[in-house]
Length: 79
Image (tube, rainbow, N blue to C red; front, top):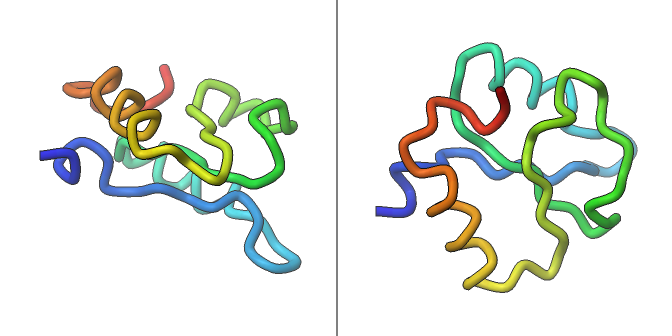
């Protein structure tokens, strides 16, 4: 199912902090994930996270499903 492909969806902004450090740790472990944000897909990501997919809120279910299906079978979202 869809949950088998993406175990993690990270919200970029968490109050006064962001989830970039957590994203880099997940990336090092080769766990597929994507960022979800209300700040737009054109936001500045750290260089190590530039290839991670970013979806903008509110996320349409079909867009989320398409993003998951595009990366099915990938060991990680970024190269």
